[in-house]
Amino acid sequence: MSEQQFEIIDFTNPDEYQRWSAVNDNVMGGISIGQLYYDGKTCRFLGELSLENNGGFSSIKRYIEPLSKEVNTIEFMFTGDGHTYQLRLTTWKNGERIQYKHDFTTIKGKQQTKTFHLHHFQAVFRGRLLNHAPELVANDIKQVGFLIANKQTSPFALGLTQIQFNALNNAPTPQSILQSTRE
Image (cartoon, rainbow, N blue to C red; front, side, top):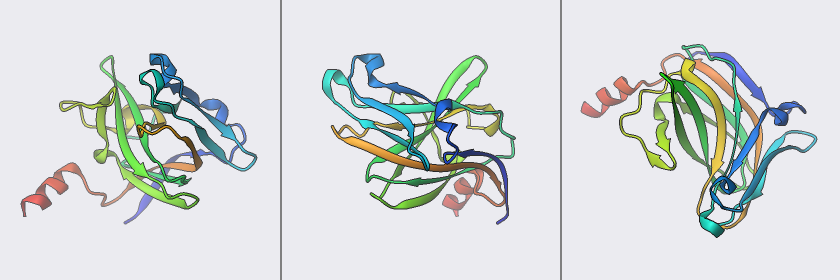
């Protein structure tokens, strides 16, 4: 398979953390905390979740430049802490904002690289899956972000290294997956 790189978010850049904003459960009365920090080498999404006042989530997000419509995968390099997170993509189309999520698990202290295909993301609204959302298309994506909402009171620390938006030739499509399940 060949690959073409389009956009890269480099978390080793000392200024990258300034492009991100945090949205924590305090918008709904909770008291969880989380923020993106630069530690001198890379950025880390860290904080602490609390279930008090119906809380339990922390997130960060940033706007991105328009992506090429050819982008069909996201490659993400990170160092885990053992928690499960969501990579989140936000679109605005026809005046509607829709968020798409892809869960990923981490291994404490281990640097990992994962590739996410756009058609594997699920549309969500406040934690609920949306059944009739439009297909996620790269040139509709306006924001990228991360969310932790694992219903546990605990500190978290996700080390972020890089996100690459790629066009991967021969990547599976929703149609090819459907066809292979019928065979």
